[in-house]
Length: 176
Ligand SMILES: CC(C)(COP(=O)(O)OP(=O)(O)OC[C@H]1O[C@@H](n2cnc3c(N)ncnc32)[C@H](O)[C@@H]1OP(=O)(O)O)[C@@H](O)C(=O)NCCC(=O)NCCS
Image (cartoon, rainbow, N blue to C red; front, side, top):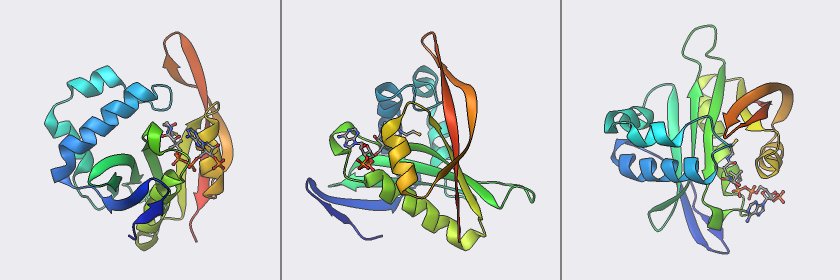
């Protein structure tokens, strides 16, 4: 993938691998603390998880991948995608963990991360990519709509955090 030249410098995009476990762990934990209602993942549980858990998330496999956005080798954004693993679900994939560090937002880095996922699906006969986003997360919704995702439903009370429930929009994009 080509690096992206931004007003803050060059950003490289690449698939993560098992050697990125500490980088990915640190970024994901930062994300869970920074935006707790954006993810179903839990900071405290994730912080206690053994290295094996993080390695399993990064381990290259036929049906899943994590991408990193980096500036001078520092991870500044991430996304994961998981293809259905059964004959009846292989035609779709779910994007998870979309995150860009606060100081790098507004530069459409998330769009590039999502396009990396969509590109990855193309050789895998994936017809549909899905994701879920909290209905109040205007920044993410704008980004997903720009990437061609359309809302097909609402998951009520999808997230519970500190005494409040959050609904999520379910969004999907057809893959040509
Ligand atoms: C959602 C998120 C991934 C978008 O990443 P991004 O690379 O900044 O995306 P974009 O540059 O396309 O910006 C999306 C929208 O955010 C808003 N935005 C612009 N600058 C921003 C900034 N500095 N900070 C926050 N939001 C900003 C704008 O509305 C923008 O839409 P527009 O360009 O059409 O005006 C990022 O805000 C993020 O990591 N948020 C916290 C975690 C999260 O919500 N993840 C999504 C889980 S579903």
